[in-house]
Image (cartoon, rainbow over all chains, first blue to last red; front, top):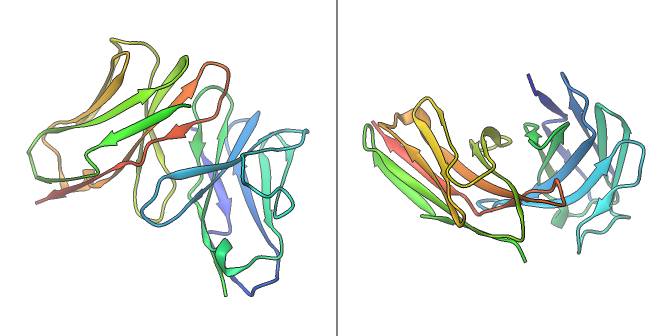
Length: 113
Length: 110
């Protein structure tokens, strides 16, 4: 149980384009989903918290107009990186929780050329 | 401000050589302390949650313990497949967010 999927697992795009990443909880209903960013050899940095049906809460320093989050249902949240630039290249990981424990997706490697 | 510090940064072990990883924390009101395992290029895999001082949990060769200031992850007779980065994270009482430590990268040689 407690499986979280992400799609796509890897994406390469040109600078200036937008990229959408999906996060799904497959076998439980997630009241809250989280989006993280991880740079090489560093730990996870929380970007935002999203609750189903309400606006996401962004961490300090994260541009909400750059990273659009939608949590349309109890099993799906999406992160859209708008007008991506090379500095947005990173490993993006989502997590989902129905209780205290966060279960993580496998991550999405974004490369912006 | 909540702080989570993991040590050592890296640990190289011979197969069968038991050792411990440390996670020290400073938070205002601990709700839970979590241990995850992360393999390269993958998302973290949940291992344990500890809620109160004195609590212990075990899974195969791993055992996690908790005091009021720190948690230990003991690896008993490790195998090469235990090689990974082990992450510690804390959750405070009024929030479901996790604050992560930098992790300990464990390498087990056959």
